Image (cartoon, rainbow, N blue to C red; front, top):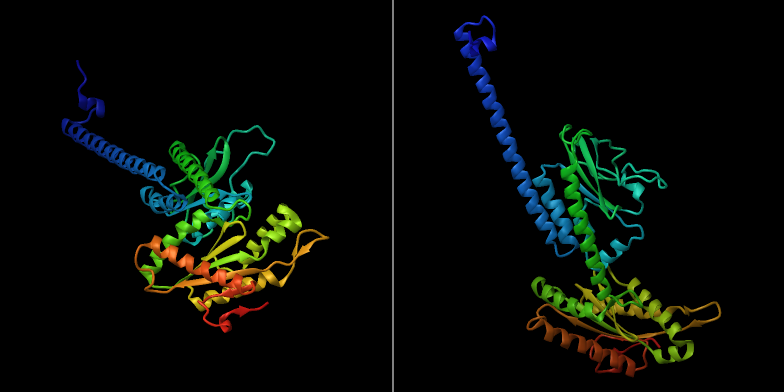
Length: 398
């Protein structure tokens, strides 16, 4: 005799009981199917969001844009409570270049720089060991062990993942993910997905940092390390437009080293280069981080001061003049040199920035240049900040 379905479910059960068991089993299967479908839809949604994220970071045009996307988008699409990024910057080159390019690090509190790989908190093989690249490290959050990766952890942080960022088996940083769910990151969890995400981020970081380095080189004077004329020409247009919108004054200095030909004739071009470097250093020491110093060429420097009226700019210019003239420039134990500068200052007051920014910039720079010429004609080693109509207006400190 053929065995019935009900007898398979429970021997000696009645037909009614067997039917109830079939209904219960069917409901359980349906619930399981519904759960699996929901998980599949959720995974598909996550995958779609991450694909969009990948496209967004690949399209980032510069360092701040890339970092901003990571910190703004990743916590949302991955449902994380904390995301930080540690970058290896052994000689502080990245930080120096980004500061030169006006990156405001305060805008990215989750961005961490370390000078040694060991400071990242990753579990690394001994330096001499022939080991594979480090893998993501998942587990419970430990305040002491993860202090570097999560300097400002959210309340209730439970589990974390430290994901190495690798380029050609070289560690360039670490993507640090945190959750208040203790089961989110466990050692048994597969890491293929987050490794793939980290590889995309690592490629984008390396590319954008390389591009920013090239940009920095293209906008920097190789001898003195300050900006070059190309940078300041671009910056002038930006600041004129910004000053017009926000209605604050900006000032411009034209600085020339006095009798620089004599310097080269006396100490040679190598000594002249040392003088240029030292003068640029002394000028920079008198400026704020928001100001911009550039070498226009030869022995000429210019300074752009943000939110500074004419009197303030003249005061800074006088400090610069005094700093350069105040002490000898030491070229060697046997050779010291006295150097002075002449400075012309012009201000663009609120309401004077109207019109074509390029035309405004040319007129403004020409005004500072003309005042520099007056300083030269009237004895050098002085600051001229107004179109002098009497000798009393000359800042003669000879």
